[in-house]
Image: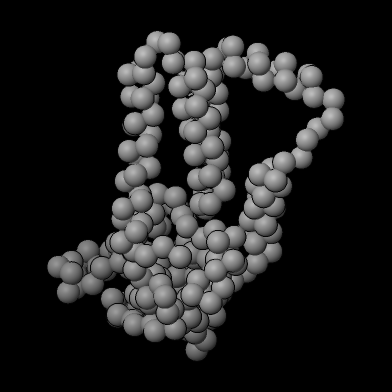
Length: 261
């Protein structure tokens, strides 16, 4: 729906709005302060709720940001809202409320039960409801993932990066490793890394599989003997066009326990 250039423009606008709202409150005349404060706080709450509904990983952050604005709403406004709620004997269902809650329900359905995202050029409705934007993410034009086909001593081949799963070159649905693994230096000799640095970094996977409680530490026939580390790239608008780059060919030494056996 949004081009890479549009995201580059809209992303900093979030920060601009966050900074502009407090300034708007401070410069407004005293006589208009209650109305300005109410409108600004309502705008901020709706703004953060919109972010929470349309971005992955922003739910708790948006909720906290929205709640932080509620105490700034003037007491007189809150009292009027409370009195209006008490006086409402027959609730009125408005068209705006129906549209708003329908959007929320549809978004939850597509996020929970829908497993694939449609091409926005073919199915605009589904693309709008299937929120797939990530908070605190760059506006990259391609997706990158890793794969490490490794050979075991018994002749079988596994993906070392995905902890022994079958090797697949297609785009994975979920990241294989989370947390600090996202900052693992996927580098090669062409990136200026020395042989010692490469052996230290990629040699960890040998130790992880063969020594640190991995399958190779329990069964010598499952020892990891060697593997290759690849970095794969594909355009976001056509993930079938995959290009791969060989980063490292790593040989794994046998462990002492298997040598003695």
